Image 1 (tube, rainbow, N blue to C red):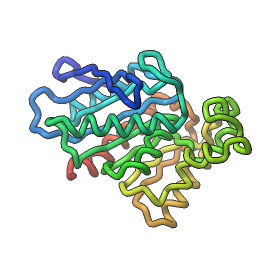
Image 2 (image 1 turned 90 degrees about the vertical axis):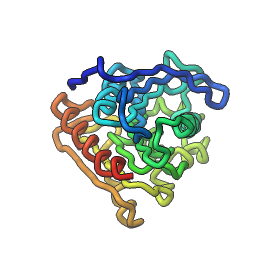
Image 3 (image 1 turned 135 degrees about the vertical axis):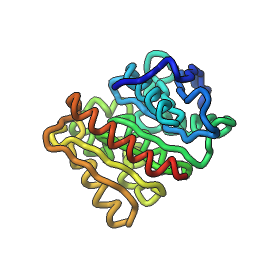
Length: 249
């Protein structure tokens, strides 16, 4: 990914959310016509990596404000991981923080995430009716299914499904899909053994029944960790999607 970082305005900030201090980063064109469309980028369960800031910088190259956040419980931010509970409130608070800025177009907000970041992003789309477009990479949508494949998640949720059914219900975005009000791009690898592709195909089936706007791209050769070529392709698809739905907001 090539980014002309010297031409981009960059800011590091601290967001206070529900009593927890979270570190964030934003990039924007230095002299662009304002206000700007915004894309939030939410990181995967592996943690915050430099690639997310590079993505924000490339978004800025293309006329957006790109924003990343180190989620609660990860090095650099306070709090503990809750796997789709406190993190969703944090996204809501980040969104209000951004909408209050004079350089942000409050009606041109996009959101994206990968794996756990996509899980948090989709739950936020369902909770907050402010987003105009969302892109979801390798998204877990059914927590009972997810914990069977990844049993360690139970510790963050508060037990197994039989012990904490409400905690699984509120974190299962597929159960709340009727609340989605913006177009979505769903991308998943069919060889994914961490978040099996059925999470996305079942969501797509439900969105179809609900007559919600979405686009689905499945790639037979990709697993949970994408190949270099797969990442480049999926990033291009993502940029094109935001171009179509945010630049016209």
